Amino acid sequence: MPSKDHLRRRYDELLSLQGMTPQQRGYAFEELVLDLARHEGVPCWPPYRPKGEQVDGLLQLDGRYFLIEASWLFN
Image (tube, rainbow, N blue to C red; front, side, top):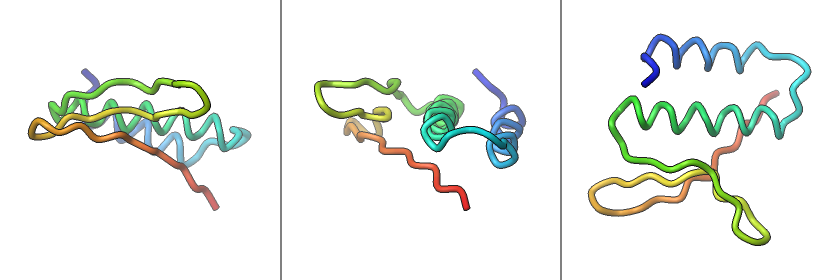
């Protein structure tokens, strides 16, 4: 499991990366969000692509499931 410092460095790297497409940055952000959930002990599952759409991840909190839609907007 990644340490909190490692997660922070990855976030800082995402802020400073040049030349990534919005889609590439979005996929990297999805991974970061799920790694943060794992760090906090929240059960989660990676992105999957049923027909015609993409689910960015799934979290389980208090017996309920939540779909994740992670978007990275960079100005």
